Length: 255
Ligand code: HEM
Image (cartoon, rainbow, N blue to C red; front, side, top):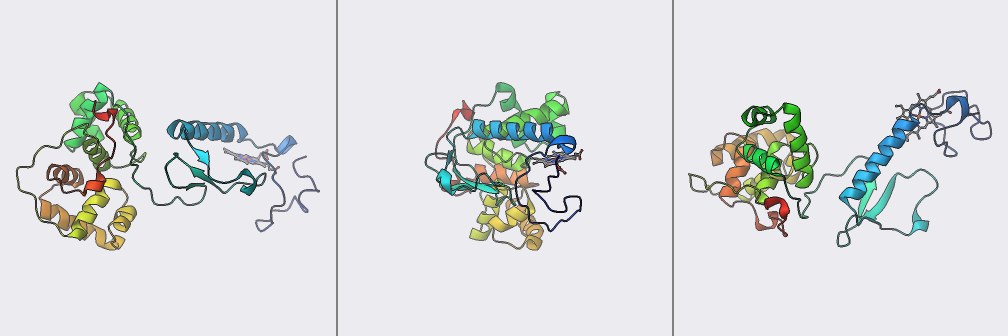
């Protein structure tokens, strides 16, 4: 039933080079896809989260321009009325860009954890300092990332930057005077506030990935920071980050 000869010739033969002639959906009959309920659940979850996050998302193409009813590889969408067109793609994701839109209000317990993040504690240390289970801390960090528009699995240094940028926590005034940093160092500083992965940090700072560890070590030495989170906090205290880095609209995150 799921191998109708009208759809594929030699359907019994495995042929990875076969040009797919028509959409099978989940198949039919005895060979009906075993993963269909899971695939449907995943699709429903992804779509629900997408529309929760971008309630104003609109198609950025005429319906006739879409390759329906064949498989969709990418769909041009406008995430918000004023934004440029993005492409929701199933191919390799493009380099993530920081989200300049208002953040959401944190709960009192999230704000308590926010202070530990800015102090440079990792999730385990936060759990022990706040006397919470690690799973609880991870869940709260997950929620904070979402509310602050941080990438889902971004480093705590990036979370710290967003917390300071949204003024959930105010950066302490550093004991030392601000060092004079070259435009290249400022660019690297800005990169570590936005990205967690070496590849993206290097790309944003115009560096070859292999040169990144040495450049970061040098930046830590120049600023006297022990680690990247401390570097981010010091940079905020010294107001070293370029003005456009600050969110244009302050939000409920700090309230
Ligand atoms: C959108 C996602 C998916 C689509 C479009 C899809 C499509 C299909 C199709 C068309 C068939 C039938 C092939 C045939 O007739 O020979 C099939 C079979 C199958 N699929 Fe999926 N599938 C999807 C996701 C999944 C997932 C997530 C799983 C597992 C977790 C899965 C497991 C299977 C298995 C085990 C079979 C073979 C069933 C059998 O021969 O008894 N599929 N799928």
